[in-house]
Image 1 (cartoon, rainbow, N blue to C red):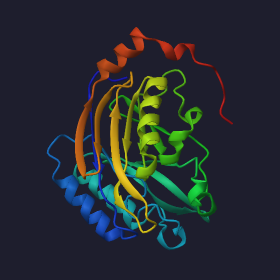
Image 2: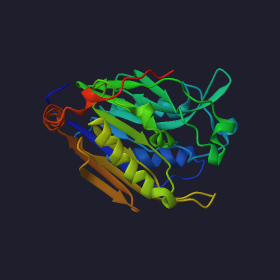
Image 3: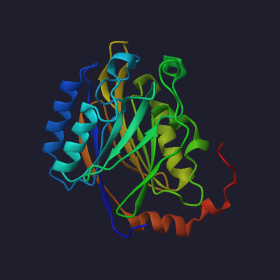
Length: 260
């Protein structure tokens, strides 16, 4: 991996329910005021709508207005912009995490584990492939919310990635699981873990405390914020990651398996 650090900007914010225009205007205002160098800017899950089960009215194609907005922001501020939104493709709806580069190139990950408790599996199609992206020599494994509960899916086999990145709409009543599992994923995969969640309340009565977090490769808490809006830029240190893996080479002893 790269020997240089990389800046990650986490945006923890309320989301106006199913109001794309208001949300995009809000995020653009926030991003424009970030004074630190932006390498990767992270928005929550379904950042333009909230965690809605109405994809038939909210979904966009891959050339839709929200992705055009993401491309504009990434280009204007010379950063990678990532977060998930509702996408329609070939007759299916996806909770899709976009990774939009300043040059307009887009990678995407479709949420694998759909939250049946809220009926997500009845409205969306599940993804079938992990997606690991790269920037400046850093490798990012893209994940969405409920994926966090399934450690086999995120297993770092042979140091495939350096950062495990989760975007979420994770309710406050289960925030102990959110914080604990983020830390566990960092420890077991010897990687940085970045989790970006929303705050506020949705029309279904769910409260969100945020608890957006950054954990180091030994599980150390590097940053965490609860309840209030937060815009935080943190530099991930490549040397810290390299030393953790060299001094404690746990990953080489992991079980071998194949994901079907």
